[in-house]
Image 1 (cartoon, helix red, strand yellow):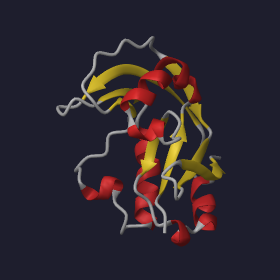
Image 2 (cartoon, rainbow, N blue to C red):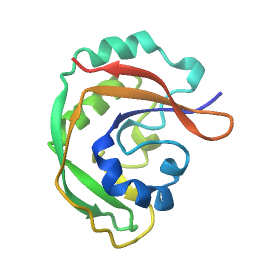
Image 3 (tube, rainbow, N blue to C red):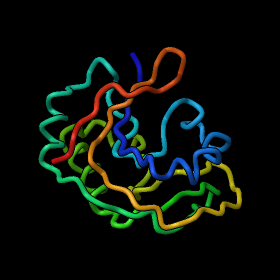
Image 4 (cartoon, rainbow, N blue to C red):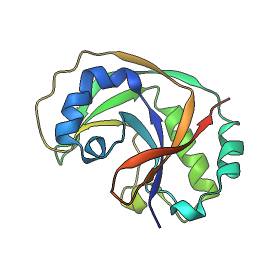
Length: 158
């Protein structure tokens, strides 16, 4: 069994935060590109129903967004805010409705806030914002035996 996650990659952010993420975000060091999480953790790899995911994501349109500001949670995690956030919230809700046994972040938070993690440790960050991007797909990524993550399948948005 291996873990999976659903993400929207943000390649435009890599130039601005890629090096910081490599030093301060475990996921970057394990092969996960700059991204906004749709659902993590998701089902075990052998339980993924790829056809259901493909059908689900064709009901959601691609959309433009901007990483418009740097935010920080009380525990020091530094992240970038996407505007608009609502389309990311809708993607998360749609997947969660189909797989109610897999709440975002294992149900440890009450409100899901879409974000791009820059650092899991409290650091000062200076990023040239805004960063403009377009969400055109959702990636299913999977953790390998060596603990690195790789893309298993890409699901286009409508």
